[in-house]
Length: 383
Image (tube, rainbow, N blue to C red; front, side):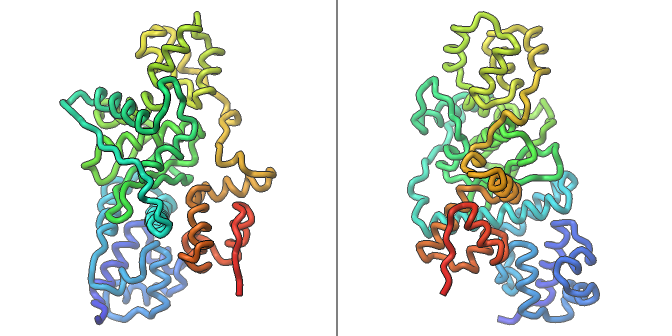
């Protein structure tokens, strides 16, 4: 089938606009001179095969998208997403989101190849009436039961548990510190959640629970962006926050703890916030809503903070040396979680993907692939 040059040019210019690139930006990124890019976007010249592959790599999409006469549904979705929320994202963050969605597609393919999708837990909340907080409280309780938690059990590795729902969860450092996380429903991969790795780990745990709240309770929405400072009148945000609080700080657990504490001092709040791996503010709010402290106490306690250095990230605990921990942290900032990297090497080891595809899935060169393999204990076969 012949390439429709006008459609090709439209796809190229629209993708460029999605990541807020100028012609010069795309020229620098691709190595293609500006005049040729202008002519390609106008649909007056044919692209070479190498150019198509370069564009596919820059925009993290299948090269077939550019040479087909079809529009990929995820292309339209990201275009709508950036049209609505683009002012909140820098060029770097827009590029990061396209890479995040690429990783979600890859993870989806890996799970299918490894036959792991059959082990996921299915859950659909029964939202009765318009009491949004009630929806959240019931959903948090239902999900805790689905995960077979005891009433007083604290979910420490929430990322691991939430992935059991078949939701793709990645962390990536974003330049906009006011963005906590986002949820996008991918037409092929399904529900995808991105957490801003720039936030402290306790905040990331609350944010992923919050985004899970959106993913299961706002199922009709195609996407959502959660901000650190949000409009307190948004019922969907209140519901997602309520879900996160009730999942991470279960009422039964709080009642049990309150029975042995005579006075919620700063020291006690800090101690139990660390045990629950939540920041002081959400714990104080939960205590206040349970009538275990009054308004004056809550206002006083909320101002205290836990040092970021005390908030351990379990993904970094597996590093044997400080240098290895630094490298793992760098990879997580790029979106490469231990879970995802593990799937990549498992699929490679079983022969489902080549070393070239492995490098592509890990957003790295073949030289970098050896370093990643060393960090995560993977093996690359040659010959």
